[in-house]
Image (cartoon, rainbow over all chains, first blue to last red; front, top):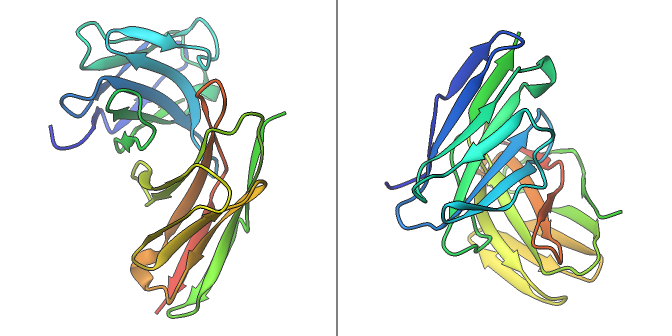
Length: 113
Length: 109
């Protein structure tokens, strides 16, 4: 597509529930990144995919967070047993072959109540 | 500890009033410094990459410069549409980006 698409744009969920956030990167971009951004802060790295594999998942805060990219295109970030502290904007970015001039999506605003 | 600090947190200028935003960093093995612009409700938009001290990049009313300890984003004769949060990020030797908290720039007409 023309840009990075993230769905849903907003998600409100109850504490303890499971959520999935979707990212559709720019066609042909092999690198895909997930970041989390809290209000008034810069993005915080979560995970980086090169193709189908997670090249660096050191930013995932704990084992409740998991991400997949089975066909090397669309990625899904999965959060189990959500907590109020998980509330943030989750940003996805893609680039060609790991270049750092990323193109970001508009993010999914997750609110855990 | 690797760190990126941006100042000021917020800056209000009149249209046409030039100024500079600062990004200071302490990172071992710097591989690059990036400037992004972020509008409310949007993801960051890439502006510049700087790789070595002394390097400069320009785009319209914006110019980014880099020294061994900091980077400046100079804004010349800004317009209201330049209002946004400007984010700085530094690429570490392990190829992870560390981000500053941003400077919120408001340009009044």
